[in-house]
Image (tube, rainbow, N blue to C red; front, side):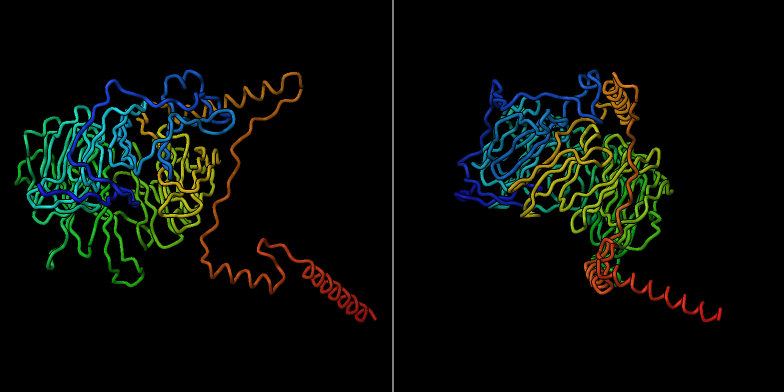
Length: 571
């Protein structure tokens, strides 16, 4: 192996900031036994939050929420919400300097790339460092869904060098290695795992190769031949199928195909959909692995209606009973599409602004229309009952929260300049964050209740990453139980405050929230302001003093003219 350069400029997977790592002379894995935990900075305490507190029984049975925050000084983990009596989060550990962090999908472990180039694996509950890896010249890292493996990519120096390594986080041993020339968003991580790590596969030339996740020494256990395959996506639990994309070539249409995992190399797809004008696709499997949504993107719109090309939304089932377009009632791009956590319905926000929002069932039949507005983002509550419809990025940040079971709007709010957004695992809180490098100013965190009321806000000089510690939603109570507990708390509070008084206070109900105003381009706002100035009306619709004075003069003049006209008629 050729000598590696002394310093290597790397980019962490999934992040857009860069940091320098000093190359190590060799690859080593350090075991930290016994596990050493960080010294807690403060003791955490859970206090009942008015309107969102649970009974003590529910609190003891459900895990506590935690938030990972990474700023310019490193990462720290917050306890809560609900936060302590002063409304501020309590840190669970001392701040650790690092350049990137990521939880495993099940939340059992998380990975941190430190400033000296060391990759540390932590046990999430105790925040103890269980193992560290010193890998030379690393440019990308990834932790497997259950935290069993750490995957690293090193810039290759020779074609014979195996620059993709798969490390066992428990033993520190090298489980598998292979060569890959470069990585892109569609080709990293090189080895993909299903959420439960029951299946593992990778994309190779004209085929998808499968491995045994428990024993990579067996090598390739099976493969599916797909000439021209450019992208693939494993289904969620159960990992029974894999979707592949083949771009169009020399007049032949592109296609999306679904294969069963573990089949023979020459097996036929169980479902297939072909289309022209396709440069890229986005896959979205439902929970249960029965249906697949495919957003097909074309760089050129032949109708010249969109500068950004055109998008189409296709739906396929693994048994081949449904293959076709999702019927959208408005022209324009597909901004976002999200499956509910039950996997029985999905929501789509689409069309030119103001965009439409529609919920469909598994047979692509519309179930509910949520109107139009300046929206481009959908976030399903982990419990599946509440849907947040928002407009982030270059939109004003309007958010509406819908109860899709009762088909009612719970509330609305605004989160300007949001870059990331995510529901808490228990479905009670919605977090938005404005982070660098997307935004260099006004970085901060906002947390909202499930009905849209703001619960917490904190600004940062520079904020890079915010995310909830993953937990299974099944470990928390249902939203319906939360609503009942909220009403009971309000009743108890009203009784305790009304003791000694003959009057009883009514229980407060959720106020009716008006829909957000339709999106208005800047030139329209300026035109309205100029018109208001000319007519003497301010933007809120109230008349200025001069306009009111002139209006009264005109009314008096009209009254005098009317009186004079009536007097002449009587004469």
